[in-house]
Length: 309
Image (cartoon, rainbow, N blue to C red):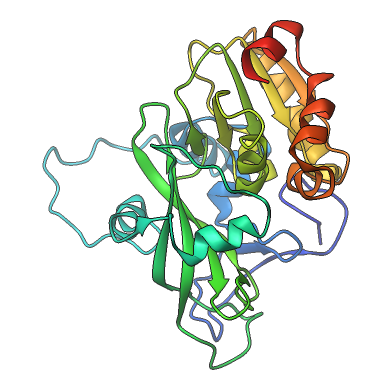
């Protein structure tokens, strides 16, 4: 028994060994504490810090003593998109509408996130399917309104989406076991705000990054969506300094350490940003924008204070 994919002591991570009532396939894992989930390839990628899916497949073949894969047919027959695939994520994103005026905007406003910008990758779906897990109550609603955030790679290609299901009655997260889930190809990718540059910020959660953008809207940012995926984000070629908006918990410590090791090997300076109230949405709600900006000012390099605050 372990606590997470990084082998932290605990008992919250479990692997499904057989088909159960929710129809999930054997071999899938779930971290009941964080809501992270995936398959065994995701565990390999997170533990090895891979930045590409090819590395993960090569490591799996090496571990299993399998021969290298043979090249597939040049023009394979089209197949139906797998559940949770990049194609499924793109179809879901295509069915969304703008966030403005939606329940999603109202939910974020309740968390003091009110400023959005043209081109932001955050949209709204009024009736997004929710696949229940074994931790959900039986006979629950099959769909809820949801905030949908596009996950993209360095080239701006959509590889997945992140969903936050909402309750229209409370304007809060939906009363389900896992109100936040991501789908598609996540490793190395993230929810991106602004064009990549020499100076950027990265954080684990979508709301962490949206909160930072309330006080630093011109600084390019990326949300990794989990500690493991934050540690594995792909670095843009121009990047020289990366501010890491860490969560104040053991997972945040681990993500910062792994990301720092990878960045150092690439000649990228890593500067942690420390919240005062657990995470930066906590700071935004507890301190307000002015005091939060003052707290961040002392953590930025002098040139970046002038540029971004």
